[in-house]
Length: 440
Image (cartoon, rainbow, N blue to C red; front, side, top):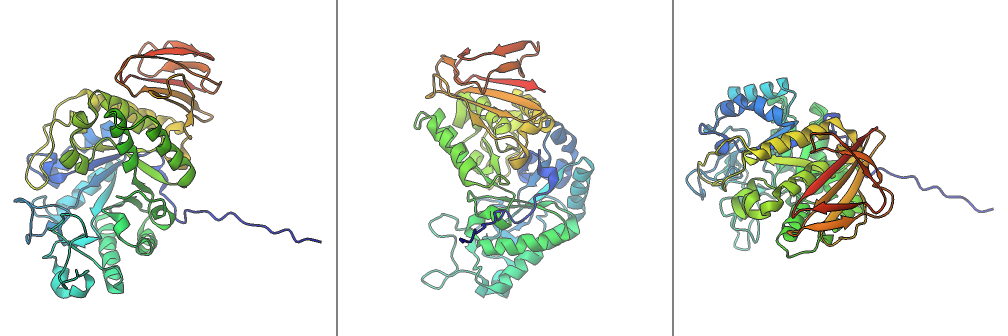
């Protein structure tokens, strides 16, 4: 008699994401450039406007004192940290930061701090106190991360147990003393995964936190991170819009995301962030007339959308990274678009994040080289979304029965019904998108 073996399924993700992130969107704040004043107080004054956009999480770029040794520009990079327990005096005091966080919580907004664990400024207080916590080059000198031009920083050595203890204690300090709700972790993949596991376990003992990795690696989700960057999503769209890659590049991203990454893994989809804006270009520069289509896909497709501060005002310029260069605020159609999209995301569970939302299912069409079409649905609503990712007018038919139904067009204020049937044909202008929805 043969023995029947059983093989239990072991969940890949070993930590719990806070439920408040289920339908969240995220907003990045560069305190220096957010206002002419460049202060925590100025950010706090704008919280009602940010809340009105529909976001749930505010990510503050590094708020620590910036190193002076090898500083770039006159003000330096906020990612060259001089003291992990300090506050940059340009931005205000500890009291003002606490007031900003408290006011955000009163508006039902969560606040995560940008954390820079891989490296510090070369005049960080730790250099003289614990020089053995840093990596050395072949000459025996402190070094920046290899192959980059980051000569305003030097890199840590995470084989040192005391460094790990210090870094976790420093992160814990901001949770305990300032009641922050988590961290966006810079260059997270350059820091060992076992450290992140240690950090997450200890931080969750204080309060349930949210962790965002500036990296694209599913393994970071196993023990530590709730969300990671969808860099390849952004790169695929830019390559498609620039006519240097086929539309299948985007399909490959979604295939990879669905089959290789755990369902619990949130992916941050974006058309801009501080790196993109400073070094690659504004959304207008990168995506041109396709910008709105890319924004709509970032919000209604799978992934958590990011708004980089200033996008809602049209993001009219590349912000200087090492100098003062305030955002030019104005009313803009992009802000209205984000407000409408984020309202839909919050209202309809099919559009929620990770396992809380519905998968995207491809709808085959007669113009696969140009038209991206899919359905997301659950027992509350059904969404048929069509994007023309080309600069040409297209007539397109759709195949199979998944999409067939009676919908409204969410961008048509008349709310008239559209009966979409097998072999339905649609006319689309260059870069046009249509979002059809049925509510059950």
